[in-house]
Length: 131
Image 1 (cartoon, rainbow, N blue to C red):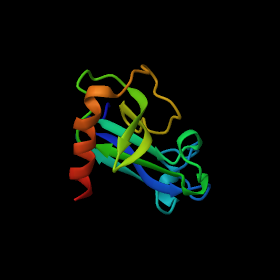
Image 2: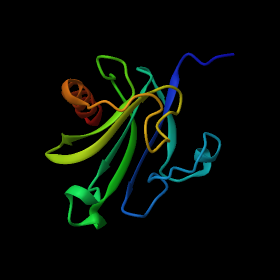
Image 3: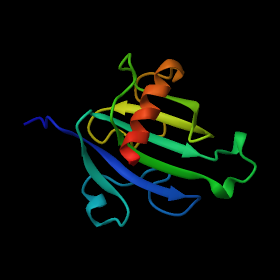
Image 4: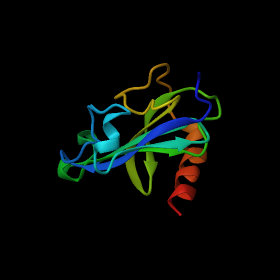
């Protein structure tokens, strides 16, 4: 039986602490017992990952953070991707993927296009989820 409602991993880790960072080593069964990590239902089917403070554009890597979440809408062309973009006035590395618990990977499975035009739509969706 195929599940209609997709799930996404939801968590946030700072620096080298926590279980949310890459490489993400947990599976759906393990997150049930892992503090701060969950597999949440995602109506859109689109999962995301945001990495703040990656070395090439931040001098203070101690402030690096990784967040995984469900996003309200995916890119307008429905392509999985990762790219650098600006989110909350910070330059971040952001990934989007479609599928059940797909936001474990360090890179997307299919496409590596620039976020470009769709980033504002997805960022707005993320902001609405925060409220």
